[in-house]
Length: 142
Image 1: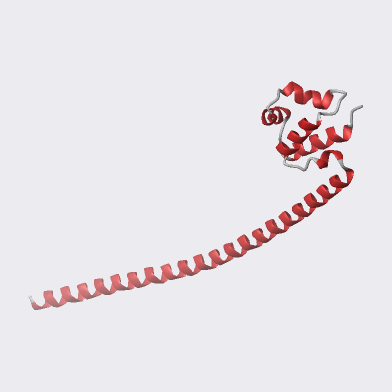
Image 2: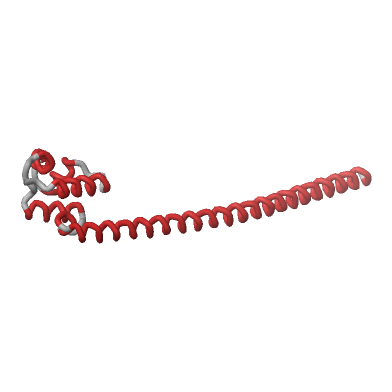
């Protein structure tokens, strides 16, 4: 008699890892039809096949056959998901802080550029004024 728990566990892991029956068949070195039969047939997969499936799906073999191991695996998976969420939140905060610092530095650079532009314009105006004065003096002497 077929154990539907094994089938459900395989399907759940395939879904979580975004692996379809064709992908699983390729990774196992069997046809898609054989994989399909794992889900539609009346028999459980052979131990050797189940071991290969566990290896391909990167789960412990015991996950498919032991209720306790399944609970432990789910707990570990949940802990990993929690850790991942915390890391993502931390990374988001760091990125947000970096963006604020970047914006502040960018504003400072803009102010510095404005200051430099004003200084250049002042120098240009001084040069123009000096040239006009020199021209007036030369015209007055001539």
